[in-house]
Amino acid sequence: MINLLKSFFAIFVLFIYGYLLIIGIRGEALSENQSYVLAMSSALVSAIVIAELAINTDNIPTFKSLEFNTSDTEKNVLKLITACYLLSWVVLGGLAFWKVYMVSKTTIVDPTTLTIAKSYIGLVIGALYGHFGLTRQEAV
Image (cartoon, rainbow, N blue to C red; front, side, top):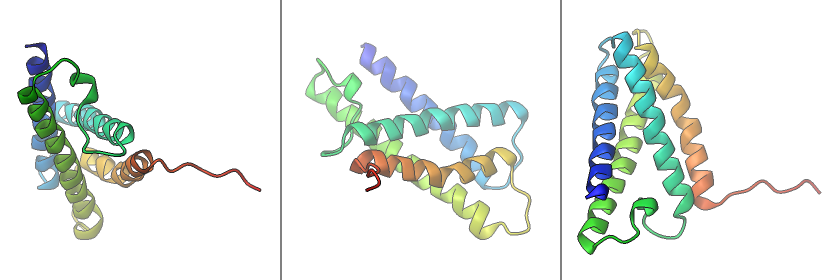
């Protein structure tokens, strides 16, 4: 039961992130409260995605912290939620980046959407470093 509540919360945060980011990508102005919620939900979703990619380097990412003592059905639900997080983060972040840097040369973009688009590439690089286990070599 607790895992279902955690799953519901995770889906709710992802829905809020997606809904508000789509509003920003479409070019509509966000209110101050919407901007705050978008920034917080974006940080949560990005942190979850990067952490999952860094922890699971050899198999399909799932919420490992929720996977203990769960049934096969709950494990499948967790895999589905993780896939939704990864897909949403990649697609919506990519769309925000594309809209801000490739399409909107003269149009005004919502400041929060602009910030998310600016930080997206850095977050992608961090996620890839974490997932593939890349480390910096010492200078010889």
